[in-house]
Amino acid sequence: MNKAALSLLMPLLLSACASQTTTDEPPPPPVSEPELSAALADQEARLVMAMEQQGSRLNTSHHAFMKALQQDIRNLKKQLVAVPPPTPGAAPSMPPPPPEIPDNETRDGKLIVGETEDVWLDAVNDAFPARIDTGATTSSLSAQDITEFERDGKPWVSFNMTHEGVEEKLPVEAPLVRYVRIRQASAEETERRPVVELTLRLGRLSEKTEFTLTDRSQMTYPVLLGREFLKDIAVVDIARRNVQGKPKRPNPSSE
Image (cartoon, rainbow, N blue to C red; front, top):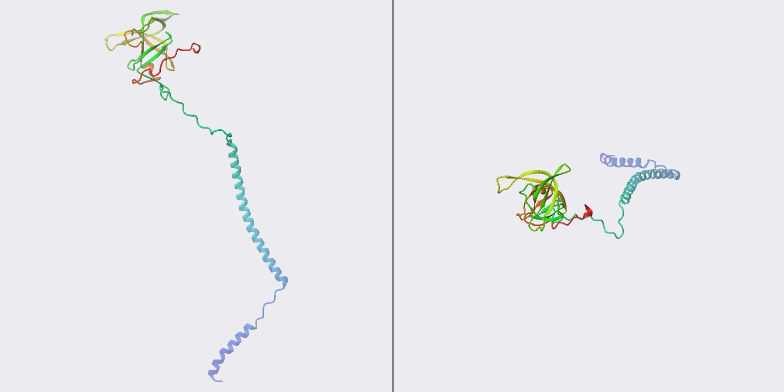
């Protein structure tokens, strides 16, 4: 056989040998029915175990969520019990309106007084017009026939309150508090005046007030109210008059 034919034949022989080798391997043994059932049962058991583990994890998360939800519901119920239900047909409660401030008082409760006011003097049981004078330190009262005397070992004074428009003299007796010296703007010398304490009523206010006694019969107003009376209880609006109105006669039963 020549070399050319041998070179063509060799690949065919090698191919045949390889094919023979592959074909000669024995096939796998057949699986019996019991073995197949056992393999399927093993796979089924693994699958069931994996599903149970996954279900357990899901149940744990679900249980925690449900427990938290139940606690929230209990808290809401407690809040609802704490709030009383509204009365059927009743209007919702509203805050009370702020108290109205009278037009003759300030927000902090002080009286507003004008240039003049009517006042009540318990000592004479009558009302008189008064001039409001912030330039005067003390208040003063029109008095004549001033006489000092002693009662129970203490100094007293008696005087008659007189003024234009008063038909008769009004006698008054009161304890003497002290004497003061007053200098008039039109005079160089000072005047020694007795001071008494009388109850004065102005608007809703009733105050014991010190008055110097002097003859004011030639003046327009028998009563003058000065700074000592006005401080801390009243503010003055000189553009107005008789802001507090006419004083009411005191009720004897309320004394």
